[in-house]
Image (cartoon, rainbow, N blue to C red; front, side, top):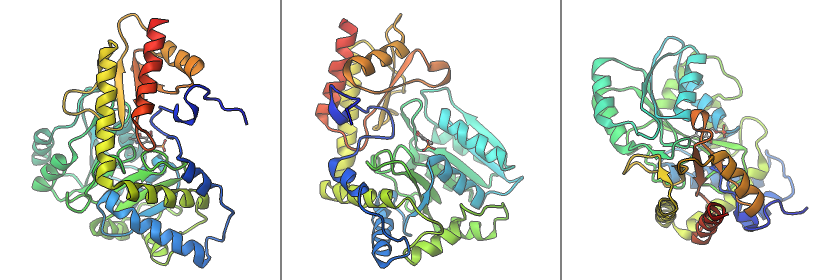
Length: 366
Ligand SMILES: Cc1ncc(COP(=O)(O)O)c(C=O)c1O
């Protein structure tokens, strides 16, 4: 098949997921099928769900649902929140709004703390809100992909735990495996990740790290669910399988990606993400773009910038794709034509960032 990314090969995918696959991972994903009830599969699944634990800071094996990230968010909500329960959503962008909409759809009484796009949720405000009112759960996006903002999650979790015994549910979809996550140490209850972002694997699995409080809440929770039942999945994973047919190829791919992450070292993976993000920001500032994220809250996995005055971000995105084979995203909603978003998570190195910056510079000069 002819490559659709001629200039920078298979490294030109600079959207915020799916991300490029390392050759080793592609090879693993193309393995022959095996039975998901076989001993061979049980071994791989057990290993994968164990080896994901440090990435989430979880005590229990991580649960793989065959779903996209939103399916994982839904699993977290339907297993722990009942109609009429009070949910606080820290909404700092598009994906925070999705968490609120999803919870509302299942009948929760949702209160949103909304921050202007580009800003993070701040611990003192959350603590003050929790002092004023009681909530059954707090939903928070770790890394808001729509704005390139990283929430100060350790501080937020500390503030929540000081004031409340609400369940803390984290959307870690664009942070897991790129940014430290300590579910248990931070007193949080569920974190949702995916395979197709910093985990360098194809889309297909939503990964749920679940603590004891959440499992207990799930046992008592009366909200109907079938496919997404957490306790049933936890039991299945404990015996080395999944409740229903899993995305087997993605499990194979993920096993290989975890091997690569372990070879590099998780702390070094985090450092690489921080350094590449910093280089991306500097390069874009030098080219005349303006950062969307407030200082000290910039994301290590996705950079969102405002295009220089008079320039259409949507037009620039199209030209980068056509002329350079570099694929990135524009802003969401009202930011569609003014903001450019560059993903730098997973299988990405300095040369990939330099190639991206060169492509952008080339189009600015054109
Ligand atoms: C922070 C965040 N939450 C949720 C999602 C939704 O994930 P999916 O598209 O896999 O359902 C995304 C996807 O980009 C995301 O970045």
